[in-house]
Amino acid sequence: MQEQQASSKRPTARDRIMRAAEALFAERGFEATSIGEIALRAHVNRALLYYYFEHKEHLYHQLLQEGVERLRATVLAATNTTGSAREAVRTFLQGYLQTTYHDPGLVRIVYREIVGAQRGDEESKALVRQFMQTIAQLEQVLQRGVQSGELVPHDTNKSVYLLFGMTNVFVTLAYLEQASFPIEEVVDHIMRVFFEGLSARH
Image (cartoon, rainbow, N blue to C red; front, side, top):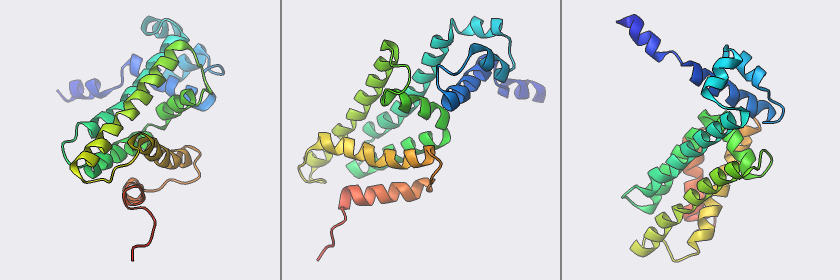
């Protein structure tokens, strides 16, 4: 029984290929990574790799889709929150930062596509558009806050991208390994600045 449980927890060959490709694409980029290198790192032969993935582009798009879906899930968790706008934004920040901190390889792949520094093919662009459209759904959270009187009337569209930008500064710092602040500390700081501003109250 214990042996069965242990074997069920072992990563499958497909999982090993995905994680090896994630690491290599994140480190070197798409063009500088070969199928042979991915197979070698995953400890599989090329035939098995091609059994799961038609070609390198297919494997890359599967990883990009996985990264986009993980990030989209953090936004959807916030938009599905029935509490206040503040609670929903905190839910987004916690989930988004946890994902970006704990899955840096996938996030690096997604971010390269967002800034157009990687593949830039139509399938990749479509996945990035899907992610950015999901980010825009956070506007519903802020609009709900305005309608309830929790927030003052403001340009909710610009505020969403301001929030996204503030958050991504900390993601970029961690990505560049220049600084990595505790998640709750970052969340509290963004919440304070975003909702209360920096002006002294008299």
